[in-house]
Every structure is written in structure tokens, then in C-alpha cells.
View 1 (cartoon, rainbow, N blue to C red):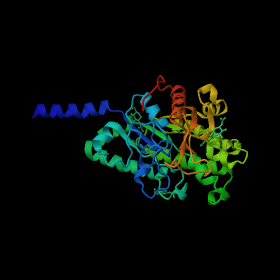
View 2 (view 1 turned 90 degrees about the horizontal axis):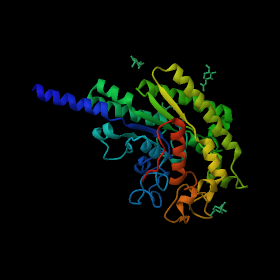
View 3 (view 1 turned 30 degrees about the vertical axis):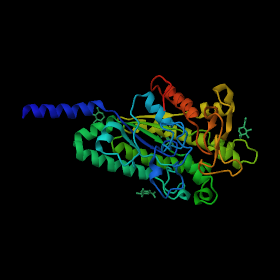
View 4 (view 1 turned 135 degrees about the vertical axis):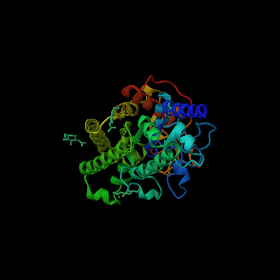
Length: 348
Ligand SMILES: *[C@@H]1O[C@H](CO)[C@@H](O)[C@H](O)[C@H]1NC(C)=O
Ligand SMILES: *[C@@H]1O[C@H](CO)[C@@H](O)[C@H](O)[C@H]1NC(C)=O
Ligand SMILES: *[C@@H]1O[C@H](CO)[C@@H](O)[C@H](O)[C@H]1NC(C)=O
Ligand SMILES: *[C@@H]1O[C@H](CO)[C@@H](O)[C@H](O)[C@H]1NC(C)=O
């Protein structure tokens, strides 16, 4: 009996001191499969050519040809890649060993963002799902071990692009006429403040918030600008969001006990890649690699789209999302700036 008890304690302790896992909250930039299970969603990377440079080359649930930024950052930190929340194989053992990814294409800080896509998980919804995950783990390993597990886990929150691109900047949505750029950004930041405070109350301690990239330079935004140039007004919104959310994290780091909240900023690095692609090994930083030619803009890349010749030479994969190669450079810039370890070349 004593022996059994010892073995059992050893097992529980081994698990709790050993596994540091990640929980990821985000949108299509971090989705690893949730939207493919949301069958009514209009934003699903379910068909080729998504995933063409990942694993067996079939759609991987990611909105890119290869890895996401969060994949690469996590790999560099030596953390396992968390499976999608809706992955049917997700069970409590998997959660204890790998964490969970709640990210969903079209998801926003605001519930009403990207309603056009019909199905997607907003950040509030993702937090609700996280609570459910916590209940499940508490039942499995008990409250104390669960508290330790969730406090030592790493968290990523990467949201906000859709709140601009698929809400504020779309003139059919009320938010676009009820707010101006500054008041809308403040609305996002106060909402984000409540969300991060709730996450803290749930035991989130080590969190990285990824800031936004130059949203005005994604192919869709260039297409909508008749000049084909980046939309500077959109870029200004992203910069405003970044500066206010960075300030929010500084404030929360002062007011909430025991937190390490970091702001990951790759905006200016991403802008440099777009402005001087050749310096970084790219040939094209304006058009999507996967494109339907003159039927633009298309929400997703499809089997009818044509692909660029060399996917590692394009910064953008589709109208919205960077390629694996661009994600790698951006992720390495995050890792360096945040002191997360030595950037390295990963594999898909
Ligand atoms: C947002 O959605 C969640 C459910 O996902 C709901 O609980 C919450 O009340 C909503 N918040 C607002 C401000 O609409
Ligand atoms: C951070 O705190 C300062 C000082 O209290 C305040 O003026 C500022 O508005 C806060 N920023 C955010 C984003 O909440
Ligand atoms: C903060 O950390 C200290 C030391 O680990 C602990 O005693 C305290 O209870 C923590 N506070 C909160 C609110 O988690
Ligand atoms: C990028 O590719 C698009 C579409 O193939 C093309 O129209 C554009 O001229 C290219 N840009 C550069 C800088 O080569």
C-alpha cells in the first residue's frame, strides 16, 4: 500500500513539475484546426493549397502553407504544439502534455467582429472554453495540482486584426459608424483589459500578447486601395493598437500580482520586410502566392487558385496571411526581442 502510494505521488509530481504547456488564444494567424471543425464557418482553410508545405501536404487547419508564428515561437522555446480545441482526439492526458489551442479564424476581441463568417470563436468564447478545460483538469488531477499546472503554463494571446479588417473598416457594420479610429481602439483596449483580468483570475501568469503587423499592407488592403499601395490609415490603426496594448500590459504588470505579461512587437520588422523584400530573400511582398488572378479578393485560397513558383519567395500566402517563410522571420524577431531563446531554423 505504502509503495503504491509512493508510486502514485511520484507520478503526480513528475507530471506537475515536468510538463510546461501552452494555451493559445487567437485568430486565423494562430488557428491550427478549429475552424475546419466549424462546418458553417465561411473562413476555413479546409482545401488545398493550405498546408502544402506542412507534414503530408494536406490542409493542416492552418491559414498558411506551412507553420504559424505561434508554432515557430513555441518550437524555439521547446514547448509542444498544442492541438486545436475541437480536435476529436483531445482528451485530458493530451491537455496535460500539450495544452490547447483555442484560436479561430475570424475571431476578434469583440464578439460582433467578423459576423460575416457566421461561425468563429471570439476571445470571450475562447476564454469560456478555457474555463471548461480547467474544470475538466480539476476533476482529473485535483484543485491544487491543477492550480500549479495552469500557473506554470505559458499563454499566448494574438488578437485584434479582425476587429479592424473585418469589423471597423467594413462600412456595413455599426462599429464603423459609431466610432472613430481612436475611440474604437480604446473600446478594444478596455475590452482586452477585462479579458486579461479574467484570464489572470483563472490563473494565467506567464502570457505573451502578440501585437499587430502592418495590416494596411496585406494584399486585400492593397487591392482595395486603387493605387495598389499599402493603406497608411490602416497601418496607423495597427500602430495605435500596439502602443495602447503595450501600455495596457505595463499597467497590468504593475496592478495584477505575480504576472509576467510581455508584449511581442514585430511591426517594424514586418514593415521592413515589406518595404525591402530582397534584403530578406523575398521577391514579392505585395501579391498573394495563392491567388485567383483577376477574381480578387477571394476569402480563401482554393484548389482553383494558382500558386506562385517559389513559395519561399513570397511574403504573403493569401489575401490576409503571411507564408511559412515570412512567419519564420517574424517569429524569430519575436523570440529575439522577448529573450525567449536562440532563434533556430525549424522543421514543418
Ligand atoms: C460575448 O460572448 C460571450 C459568449 O461567448 C458572452 O458570455 C458575453 O456576454 C458576450 N459579451 C458581450 C459584451 O456581448
Ligand atoms: C495606464 O495607466 C496610466 C496611469 O494610470 C493611464 O493614464 C493609462 O490610460 C493606462 N493605459 C491603459 C491602456 O489602460
Ligand atoms: C504571488 O506569489 C507569491 C509567492 O509565490 C504567493 O505567496 C502569492 O500567494 C501569490 N499571489 C497571488 C495573488 O497569486
Ligand atoms: C508580385 O506579383 C504580382 C502578381 O504576380 C505582380 O503583379 C507584381 O508585379 C509582383 N511584384 C513585384 C515587385 O515583382
